[in-house]
Length: 105
Image 1: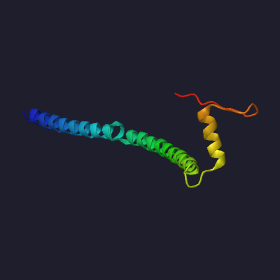
Image 2: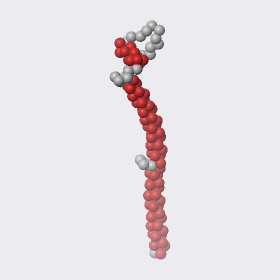
Image 3: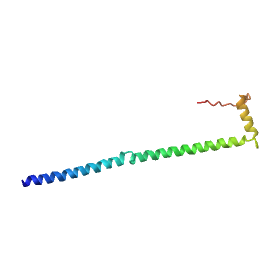
Image 4: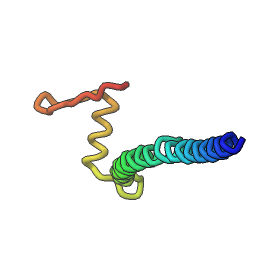
């Protein structure tokens, strides 16, 4: 009878330690591979870097567009810009001009 009680207490302790280890392992694995884990954080960091570079490119593109629009304002028209826009809209080019056509997507 004493040996059964010792065996039962040993198995109970072993079961508790096993369950505790399983729970700790579950949370440990989720901390690494889960939705908010370490690998997800690395992917978010890479996405932040890509989006930051795209934002910088778009800001530069917008600044260039604003510069071109500023050259066409009615209070100070740049003759070269006016000539370029007129040629583009009228589809006119000098035979000695190099024309680059933009393909619309």
